[in-house]
Image (tube, rainbow, N blue to C red; front, top):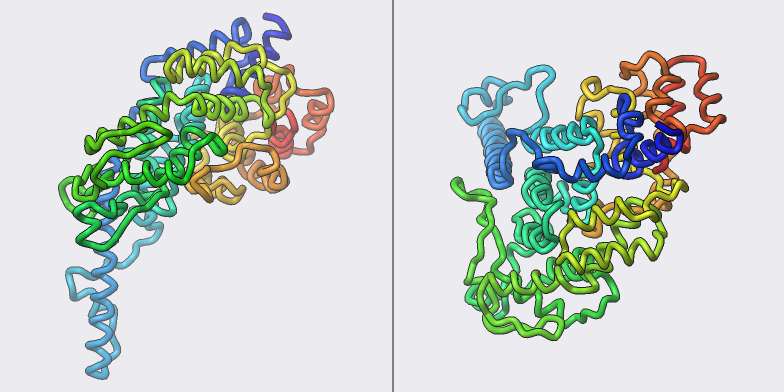
Length: 475
């Protein structure tokens, strides 16, 4: 085992995973690239073996919860009005007399159902990241989830199931399949307002005097596939939006299949449509599938995805040669994302010793938990709150383009990480911070960093200083 091998191993775990845990640097030092490739080849890599409700079940549960809340509020208002009419002050027993009245809140009551669903999903996601041997596939899941983002602020119950159902099964499959899964998922259709989009000449459009919503079509072209300034026009957006009419869901208030996908022909704009110069016949839902299939294989999509992957893993301004290699693999393999990931790992440009990427808050937090062994000591609610406090609330990006992936977006918030570092250090099970420095950074740690950690007055201070060092903050 050489120092160079250990340095490459530490680099691999920080750049392509969530940082080392335990003796991982030594474990993969003989062949760091091989370890990353092996992570790709694990059976069911990226999937979660968890017993959590589907997106449809979650949507129905949230709909029922909110309906019950509304009924309770109306009942309380009715009791109040009746009491006022009789000049009687309502009491707790008045409200309790009705079977629909809410029970008294016990101490330490769990969060309301929508928040609890989100926390359960967050825990499954975070556990997968902090317990992974390597973490490369989990990083790919996080990348694609941000690329095809939705917001829990708009559809809380579906945020986690969407990632499990639309993203995870396809992160090592074909991009065309991933794109189809994402754009037809009820969470995306609701997030980008397609559930009520209808063609002007559709049956529903004529009867309801409503019309087209272009959000899903525009973001699919601009963010998910071709990228900005790639040659599409406003006419393409409008035509594609007409293609996607009828892609909707069953309203979650329906008890059987509420929250599930539905193609509603009555909403669909009749007739052929021209998108990017190609005519697509009116074949119902297959018309949209045809457009998505061609977008997935468009050269501009290959370039756009290659640029984003290289920027995410390697540098804010990635080497053009690396981007070219990724784009070529994307095109040559018909969008095989596993092959693209292999090209990323095997390209020499990906292994530059200059660590130019600042870890965003979520990855940094996952790395802190991994290195300190505090997986079971920090409640998931505290982790979610920490992400929010640092400006990256889970599944709540500010816009459909997701969270930014450059240093400029996160550098000003780095000083605020010290409070999180201090709190998490207090929960760590590690006894010797210097030993932790060797297992977590190894040869990446500079003499100054080693000296800083060694001079700390307390164990907790040493741990907090360690995770705030430049070597730990960057990948």
